[in-house]
Length: 240
Image (cartoon, rainbow, N blue to C red; front, side, top):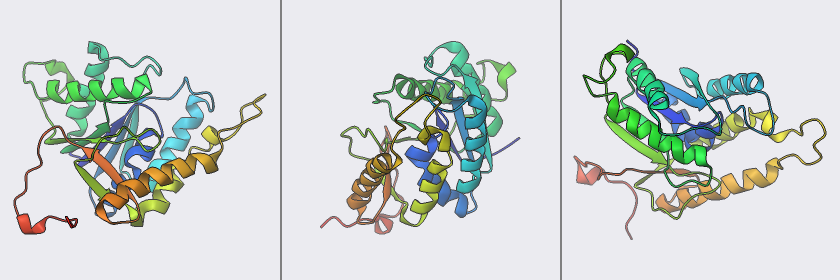
């Protein structure tokens, strides 16, 4: 059986790069086994075919150093916390067996992002039930869930922790740029998404997160439960 250290599970191709790309690159560089699971292929997006986005997702994963990436092929613009969609995630969790799952925050403007958060949370719980759908694999439950704060529409939420991604910033941005179809006009389209403005928004959010811990760039995460501390002297980040 596969045993991954971390799995980033998000709604669309490029969501993981935006929300947690720096963190995944950092952990991959440490030698941890990282997986990305895209719930959909992004087929309802205004730009790029699913096939193009598949290729872009593979290239972005290579840039981040991710060991495994797959799409569950759930319906884009149709994500909902229903049994069949949860079961698709249960099956992949039992197969990949990640110790930590990074998922999207539950407060989101995009309905798919909010739905993905609920689907993944429910699936993480259900995957650990021995009597639940044994045909989907042996029971398994991740040790920790952490919700990534979105980079372009961040809710006013105080992160439980912030990861210093300063050294991975260029890698994160190269991975985002791998989704070139999202920044290229479609046939008959006169205005493409201006990458410079988009990058400015991502840059600003990452700088704000980094400022919380006194670094240049950061990615913030929320946990629903308190974090255990075994060594008080190992706490990082100045209070005063």
